[in-house]
Image 1 (cartoon, helix red, strand yellow):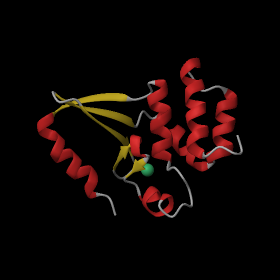
Image 2 (tube, helix red, strand yellow):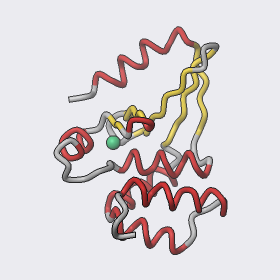
Image 3 (tube, protein in one colour):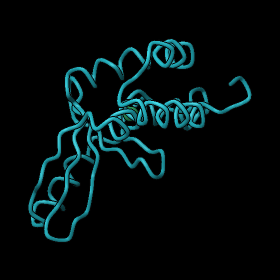
Image 4 (spheres, protein in one colour):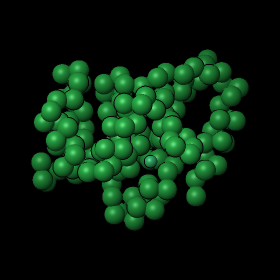
Length: 136
Ligand SMILES: [Zn+2]
C-alpha cells in the first residue's frame, strides 16, 4: 500500500467496502493510517448524513454536496475537485491530496451512504452560483 497514492488506496478500499456492503475494521484502520484527522472528519460527515447527491430533472445533471458546519461544499468527484479552503490551499499546494469532503463522497457513493435530492433544472443555475460563490 505504501507505493499507492492516496486516491488509489482509497479507491481500493472503497471497492472492497462495496463488495462487503460496509467498512471493515481493517478498512477503518487503513483509512485512519492514511488520512488521519481527515478520515475522522469524513466519517463524521458520513455518520451525520451530510453527503447529498442532487439530481436535476429532467436533464439529469448530478451534483455532489457535502453539508459543512458553515456552508455547503460543492464537489466534482470525477475531477477530484472540491470547493473548500482545505482543497484550495493545500491540495493545490500538494500538501495533501484529498480533503475530507472528497474522502466522504467516495465512501458514500460506494456504500450508498448519501441522500438523493431531486430538484428542477430551473434551480440548477441558482444553486450552482450559490455553491460556487464560496470558492476563495
Ligand atoms: Zn473539500
